[in-house]
Length: 113
Length: 117
Image 1: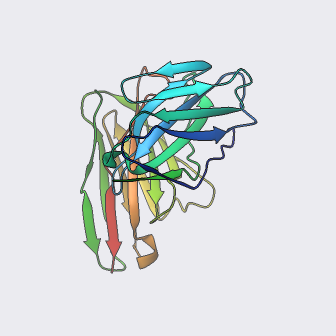
Image 2: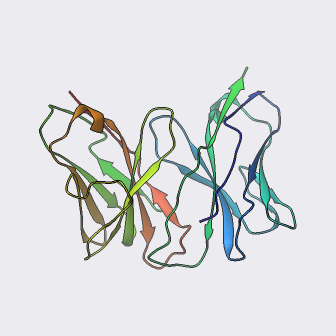
C-alpha cells in the first residue's frame, strides 16, 4: 500500500477555493487515488476518486499530474460546513478480499467566517 | 446509496464488562466488513477485516481474544470488546464492501462511541 503525506492542517475563509495536496511517491500502476471527508464523531464519507488528469463532481475536483506522485483535492467556494478532516488514500481498484483501506494522518481543514 | 448502520451509537460501561457493537449493511450484501478504531484527534486505525463465514483477519498489534469479530451473515458483523478497560474507550467505526463492488466501494457506518469507566 502506497504511503501518503498530507499537511496536518489548513485554514481558510468562507467563499475561498481550498486546495489540499497529497504526496504518494510510491503509487503503483493499478492504484487509484481516493479522498474521504470526516466530520467529528462521524464515519468517513467518500468525496472523489481518480486515476489520472482531472476528475470533477458536484462536491470537488481532483487534479492528478502525469507522474501521479501527487494529487490535489480542490474544494470550490468553501463554507463553514466544510470544516472537517480530509483523508487521501491510495490503493488498488480491483476487487480483492485482501484489499483494505489504510488511513493516513489526514488534513484538518478549518474554515473561518 | 448504500447505507451502513451501527448500534449502539454510544455506550458507557463499567470496567471488566463486555460490549457488543453491531454493524449492518441496510440495502446491500457485504462480503467483507472492516472495523476501525479512532482515538481523539487521530486517524482511523484498521483493526480487522471480517469476511462472511470465515474468521476475521486482525491487523498487527490487535488482540483477537479481546476484540471478537463475528460476520455470520452478509448484512451483519459484530465486534465484541471483552473485559473492557478505560484504555479501550474510543470511537469504533465499521465499513462494508458490497459483494460485487470494487475495493473502493466501501461504505462507512456512523461510528460507536465507547466509554469505559
